[in-house]
Length: 156
Image (cartoon, rainbow, N blue to C red; front, top):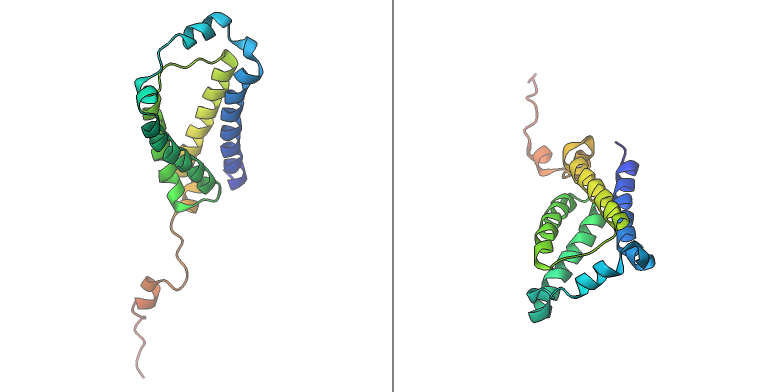
């Protein structure tokens, strides 16, 4: 896989999740009024209602980590792979604290496609030839090469 295709997959994942977040807002008729009313009648999760600043204190660093790791993956930064993996796992854990959600079939399909693309990005970052681009690059003058003993020369 080429770096260009890898970066395209990252961009695809980002664009799909943005589209998923916007589609129900742009086309509200995709969700019935009955379902919308039912969601509005649901109680607000206690974490959001009782501790909004704690929620912000958790979500803001997580969002920054997601954005930083995405940009880092685009530039093949060594730290980006693990940050992307951990922020993904943290995000999956956070979902359980924020209560029910409602989305149209189209938004759900876009979200699923984004998740599949992101999973492919993580898999490629760890288990493809591209994973070498995330490794520590050693220059020609590393300490190991400087300190290595020279081959014995025959004496005359």
